[in-house]
Length: 86
Image (tube, rainbow, N blue to C red; front, side, top):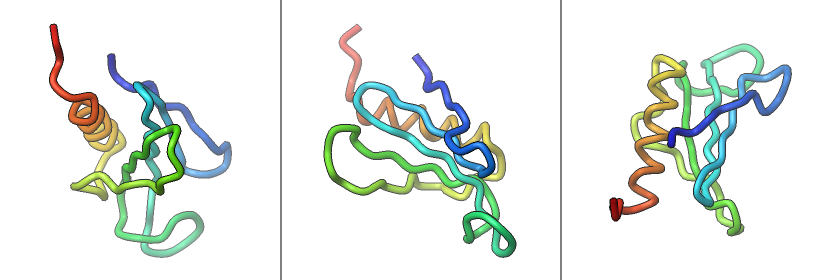
């Protein structure tokens, strides 16, 4: 099952999703202007839901499109869940 992202903050470029005990966030960054600053693109990160650890940036960020960031989050969730027993 793929993650279902929703806008987390109404006036900012932040989307979040949860699945299998993990939280994923995608933000849009730009080098200047309002919002998050960084290399232009979509940055994806994850963390365990029930631990006090900080978020970990997903390799490949910043992505050119939201769809690429979303795919990276779903791929990471697959790694975090481990091998399927199906």
